[in-house]
Amino acid sequence: MIRIFRLKNIISIKDFEREDIEYLLDEASKLENIAKSKEVSEELKGKLLGLMFFEPSTRTKMSFETAMKRLGGECIGFENSGSSSVSKGESIADTAKMFEGYSDALVIRHELEGVSKFISDIVDVPVINAGDGAGQHPTQTLLDLYTIKNEIGYIDNLKIALIGDLKFGRTVHSLSNALGLFDNVKIYLVSPPELRMPQEILHDISKTNIKYVEVDSIEEIIDDVEVLYVTRIQKERFADIEDYLKIKGAYIINKKMLEGKDLIVMHPLPRIDEIADDVDNTKYNKYFTQAANAVPMRMAILKTLIKNNPKQ
Ligand code: CP
Image (cartoon, rainbow, N blue to C red; front, side):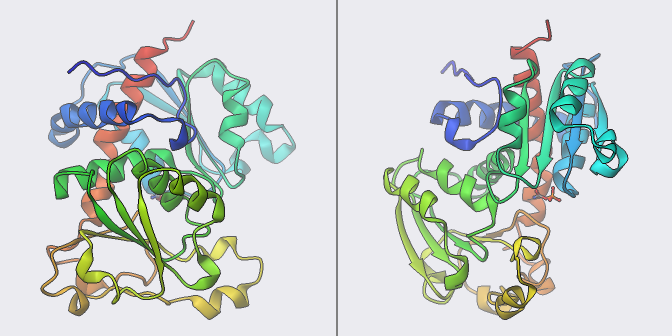
């Protein structure tokens, strides 16, 4: 089947249709050999990727850099606004216009929701949202779906638990929206009452054929899921540290509770204490595979956006 990818920018997973996701899943599969073989292709030779990271990142930034280099391209950018002229008072709009002049596509992480969308409206090169506050993290969702497809074999009919900080965790917001494009998915939402999934996302998924249930404990649902998708409590997004300390460590997955279960454990990382180290050397651990899958998926994204939208 010939698939197409319609989008110029990747801002929110809500802009996607199922066909767009399937296109990138197929592309990532085709690029897996280059991602793993340590070869370099010439697909994006001579192209430059602009990385504007106003918030910290390990995986997203490094995997975009790796993906671009494996495709024969190069990267420019900064990893905190203190090392750019934003620290001297330059506006984000002016900074983005500079990057537009130098680069073939921009990757942006910012603590405020909506910054990537704002920049996509003022530049002509493709813009990729690499996480905006508690909003969306669409490229994380694409690599999450790639991991689920590879490890479980299907996304339709999936039974998945989203665990932890569902209020501030942008990865679970994007993933919930994306799963709404698939058939007959069941989502268990496991969180403390203070960190429940926002009403806006519940409203979105209630318009799809997802069945969802909010529960308080992992024990209630562990026998009924194929994926435990664990997230950290996002300390940096609490206005009062006391509120964070009250719920810190509310859900911890360990090896003993997984024994005999037929499921995988995923986590966008970084983890703090929500998955015990003793899970790392078990068959349940797919969170490091998930992090590695960022490279073929982000190769697919960069190749598609930059080739579909050559700089004028
Ligand atoms: N998963 C993820 O976004 O990790 P980083 O914050 O390290 O980029």
